[in-house]
Image (cartoon, rainbow, N blue to C red):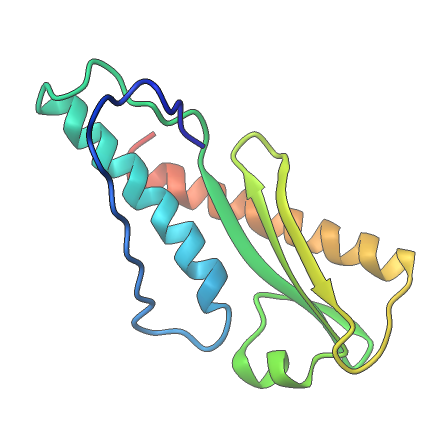
Amino acid sequence: MLDDFAWGEFTLKIDCDVLQADGGTRTAAITGAAVAVCDAFDWMVKQGKLTRSPVRRRVAGVSVGIIRGEPRLDLEYVEDVSAEVDMNVVMSSEGRFVEVQGTGENGTFDRAQLDSLLALATAGLVELDARQRSALGL
């Protein structure tokens, strides 16, 4: 996500507390933290502390799962705890996967279901990327 050598001797600490959510707190924290990092480095550039932002890409995360045989995006808590399959997907703003972590919680899943979940997650992540860009004024 960052060009490690472009930001000198600064320390950036991001602490994400999801204040209101009904499931998906880890993926919400990842998505929000990416915006916070971009915003922090943009501020440092405006303050003259850096000549350019070291951010090369943003990341966003989303949960997907299979509930009663049906693929779902952005699981609520009641869906998450009863999901047959639960998966978190994190992608970069370049459309590349950073993490795919899935578990057959109450069953197993086949390749077609995996492909369906990844397609659903990708569509959700494209929307999240657009919202991140909007929040950052890009």
